[in-house]
Length: 145
Image (cartoon, rainbow, N blue to C red; front, side):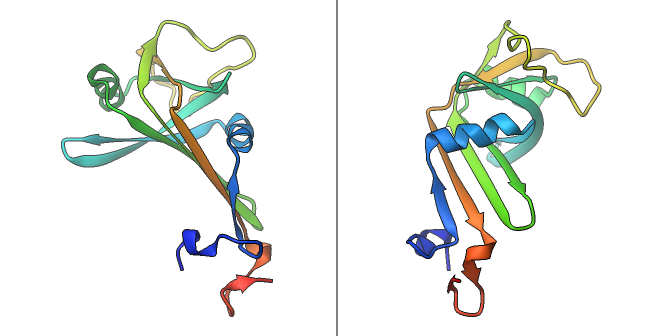
């Protein structure tokens, strides 16, 4: 059964509103940026912050910088699981190089202590999300409990 088939009052799959998506994005600091490169899907982790409905990160990745320079649309994904629920948010948009660092209080903490060559911002053209509530799902019947 696909998540689209599970929509409904008893479904364990809940669609998030854009505001709920942004709330989840604000809480996390590690996401994935996906793009097409040479006919293949590339997915790379980035440390980020979300500020005023935009996603900011610093990078030294030649793959990401090439996508920025080529004007390639990207998908940005963040998810989390706490044992009872899981959620996923996907934002689509065009990344742009910026000279601006995020405002004070929005520090990007890199897991990779390498010099970053550029700051990148994505202002999403669309954002969607889903919450997967495992407490509401009975795998034996394929319905909510």
